[in-house]
Image (tube, rainbow, N blue to C red):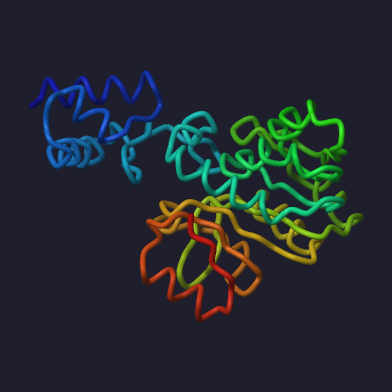
Length: 252
């Protein structure tokens, strides 16, 4: 047992993120056994458990898990959410795409829509859009955050004050039943609020694991969003909270 847990801790350090099902197959034990291993390793500070697996314990100053580690978490759900969110975009729209590992999943599905203007603070999204001649990209300036591959700060906030868009697609570091979308960084939260103010329609894109975390900074309550796109693992109490807020829920 001790040798298995040592090897799991080594894998987390090397890969940044691991999944329960992969570990169970690799070590020839049950998922229940792996979850017990992860619980003990978390208590020792060797990793941080996440829905479906675990990630390395080191975090950015913002409190966010590093971008490449977050990208490895729940990829199937994020891909489905991205595709469903892209269906809410219409030809000729001007939209804001927030930085995040879920919003970037919308990009491949924007190719067939036609002419669009995309405002974003995410470098990876801007680069992904470079092959789409019908898409005009407006990249917000500001301080570059290497953990999120995005800009923030006064310049980004001022850039948002100068635009009006049809729709914003906002990601979330975490979502709470009482507080709504939350974050651990006040700088990132201010940019997200600026995006919401600039848009006539707000769509939250967040996989169901985000609903089990707690952020320190409030971004926006459920009532700020017209639509929430998430996956079918969303807990029932979260579905009820969204319905009480009068927000449309899209489950994929």
